[in-house]
Image (cartoon, rainbow, N blue to C red):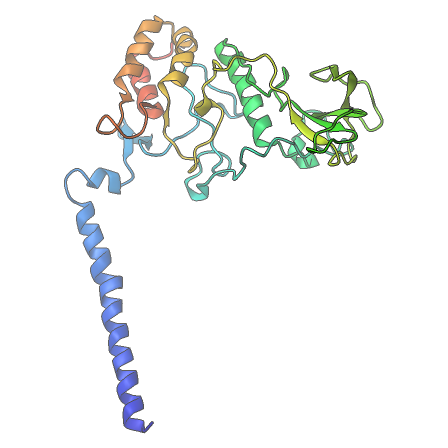
Length: 311
């Protein structure tokens, strides 16, 4: 290859680089910016910010928490669904927990690292998806004065999961249990046998609490359904995070169980609160796509305008 051919190839590559730089670095961004200025799109391009008295109160497209500084729900507000985005509704950490339906066994905390009132995660505790759902349902049931029980959950809000140890039959199931352990209910301290478990016996064998550091993986993992209703009073979106962690909406069913609490906190008739819920409910897109939802921010702002909390 002679020098002239090398020059022509490099010159062609340089021209292609310049053209693509102009198109992708100048023309395309300007085109997108121009489209964002079109009527009906500009507000969304600016983040769909909702302003109150000239100050931003949030985005209609991104959820937020309505809690106090300690993370406790503010009773005068409707609560959003859980969020796995950062510490909660962090737009810079959008994402899910990546826990699936097989996540039913907790990673226990080291009892020697636990401190009274401290964060158990600092001692190594990692709740399974099942325990997260169970604990959230129990907490919401207590807050909203409804039945917070769910299938496969214990009364104290953890996954009702047993490790059943013993010889197995040809199909792989334990035929004669010799030891049964409630995996998500650890003993109060290493070596302790005195701890409350959700079920006293399983197939005639006493259920034990889980000892920290013991390996129960040889056992058959058996979730226990319990006596909870097939249709829990606490709906699914109240106890699970969305894929983005930023969902601004809740289901009408979740809104419905919050009406009584909000009405009491604001000193008004529940029918008035329900009317506000109806104002902020959006039906299926084109009557077919998605599910009916209630925008939490818009609903709470309407309540503040019409039924302010009396100090």
